Image (tube, rainbow, N blue to C red):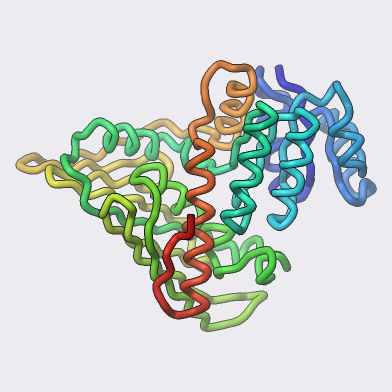
Amino acid sequence: MIDAAIVGLGRWGQNLVNSVQGKSEHLRFVRAVVRNPAPAREYAAQHGIALSDDFAATLADPAVQAVALATPHSLHAGQIIAAAAAGKPVYCEKPLTLKRADAQRAVDACNAAGVVLAVGHDKRFWPSMRELARIVAGGELGEILHIEGHNSNETSRTSFASWRASPDEAPGGGMTGTGIHMVDAFVGLIGPVKRVQAQLLTRRPPPDVLDTVSVLFEFANGISGVLSTIRATPQYWRAHVFGTRGSAEAIGATELVLRKSGAAAQRLSFEAVDALRAELEAFAGAVAGNAAYPVTPAQMVETVGAFEAIVQSMQSGQPAAVVR
C-alpha cells in the first residue's frame, strides 16, 4: 500500500480521492495539502486524511511515500521538481505542463532522482482505448495512414471555473481541459507530432462560453490526423485509426467498432472500469516496481510539445512546427 499526499482538494482532487479511498489495496491518501484548510476539514475527516497548508513539510515527511498533484497547471513543473528533489514519486494531473521545455525539466528531474512520474490521462485506461492500442500495435489494420478524434464533455456548462478562461492556466480554449486527452491518445497510438494547424472559433465569451477547436496534424512518421473538441456539447469521445487493411474506432469508454476489408463490421462492448482508480493504481504499481506506467516520459513531453504548437497555431493563424 502506497501512502500518498494529494496537493489540491478541489473538485478533481476529490474525484481522485473518491476513486481509491477505502477501495484500493494499492494506494491511499493520508494527507492533503490545501491553501485554506477550513473548507476541506469535513471532507478530509470523512476520508481519514490529515490536512496541511505546507507543501515543503509534506515532502519532508517520511510517512508520505508519494505525491499526487491536482493543482493549477502553471505550478506543476515547480512542484514536480520539488517532489523529485525530496525523493517522492509524483502523479500529476494533465496537462503535465503548458510548455514543452517545462515538461522536459520535470521529466529530467524525476529521471535524475530515480522516481516515478505519472500523468493523469485517464482515457488511456478505458477498455475501448486499450483495445484500440492493442489492435494498432498488433498490425491488424495494415499500414496506418490516418487518425481522427473528437473529445467534448460539456465543461463550459457543468463545471466552468475561472481558470478555464485564463490564458495563463488554460490557453487554447477547450484544448487544456478536454482536447489534450485526445492529443495524448494520438501520441500514444501514432507517435510524435511534427506539425499542426489549428483554429479556435469563439461565439460567446466566458463564463457560458461557446467555442470550437479544430486541428490538423502531421506526424513525424508521415501519418495525418484531425482533432476537434467542443466544450459546450454533451460528453462524446471518438478515436478512429485508419489503415490499409481496416479501421478501428473507439467510441466512449466501452465500445469499439472494427472494420476490415471484405468482412462485416464488428461492434465490441466492454465492461466499464473506474479509470481514475486504474491510473492511480498503475502509478502505485510503477512505484512498487511491478510495471512501468503506460504513459512514457517521452510521450508526456511529446504531448505537451504538440499542445504548445496547437496554441501557437491558434494565435498566429499559421501552421506551427513542434519544437524539439
